Image (tube, rainbow, N blue to C red; front, side):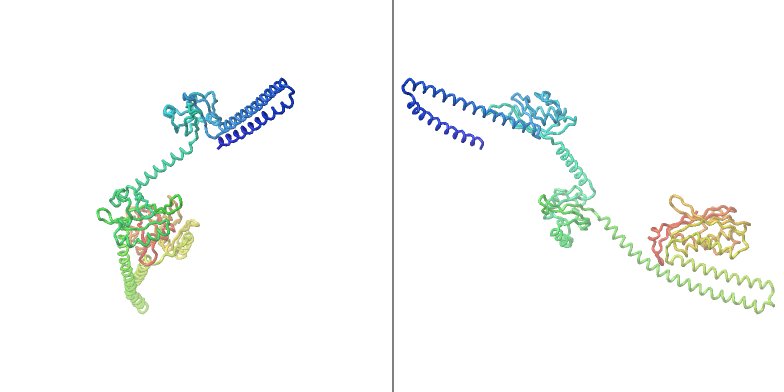
Length: 586
């Protein structure tokens, strides 16, 4: 386009020059003929006119050439400025493959002078690992005179090697003669780093998908598999290539495919992520495999739905275990119902037996009392003692029946868990014991502010039995000491009751919390033998444990713990549904 404009202007100037020149020649001769009186004068004027025309043409030619040269120089300077300030690193080489030009951008990048870079000096900045490959590609391109694209690392002015792309092409003059190469370079380090990161990411993804315990898959918009990880061979017995092009329904029993078809159709109409879709599949060997499928929709760059991508997990073992657990729970529910019914019958039987036992005991006790009132003056003293022993025995029997009934209620009563001030309970129990036996000298050491999470009535029973035992077994001490407090070890709080009573032999410690067990040396003390068994049952209901430490003649210490409130909340409350935790007696 530029050349056409120049040609058109040249023709226009030439035409104007011809018209003006022809007019000058024709009219100047006519004017000279009128001015010259003779031929000699005409000749001299004609010669002068020729010189004038020549001088004017020379002046015009000088001005035109000067203007053209100036415009050419301006144009060259303009394009040189473009090359110098162009963002790319521009170079030029002559026909012998030696560089004779580098723009300012190149020199600013390398931090070297033009003299240092000329010739083969630029190669000093190429990374040693890339130098041979770079020079080989450069020279082969020169020999074949074809364009080339090379990637290599070039040292920047700060010493860092940066990846660049060097694009060169042959350079020819107007006559078509090869005069060298011209090229440009661009820093592509960030792109290379992004490509390396993408490659590592793809490698990680492939390693994860091919080594995960789940089957990773992708289907297109028609639900045909376009990718299947090797795990499918373990789950369904098919190689990934055998799965490609098939749909999930091809691996399901017909009734399972019919069941899932509505859900799948809904996902195709309204693509959205889905989780834990259970489906039955047929293994290559004919066995059934239960899979749990999760996936997300996939879209193409234009935002159009392109399929789903997700994972399948084999849950056959879990489903089998769930079925076994369901069957076990059903059986446990049946047994629990039977046990509850049996317990209700046993409780009713206990109340009946207690009533039937109390009736004759009451009759015996009343009979003895009536005989002593009516015949008191006629009965010998030894007979009266027998009658009093009978009355005392019937009273103890009645108390034992009451204790047994209370013991049986511990497992069936509902727990009402709250924060209980155990220190206050211990103070109250100590005051009641002093009130009943004011003549005894007992020193109580009760820690203040001790609390626990539990049922207030049951915890009171625990303290009544333990403090009551300490009171009872310090009866032969002139000055008895009973201590209540709390210790903490490994994050567990332990409550204790310590006394300086008769103690016990640790060899018999395992019998302490058994019902109706009396240790040697304790038979002379009143008791029914179920107090500590009651303590054990209550502590177990609270998810704790109880144990004792002692030495014969040197007192004993009883410890018990309470479970955390969260653990207690997992205990089934109510009749016969109680969870009892094992207790270690020491």
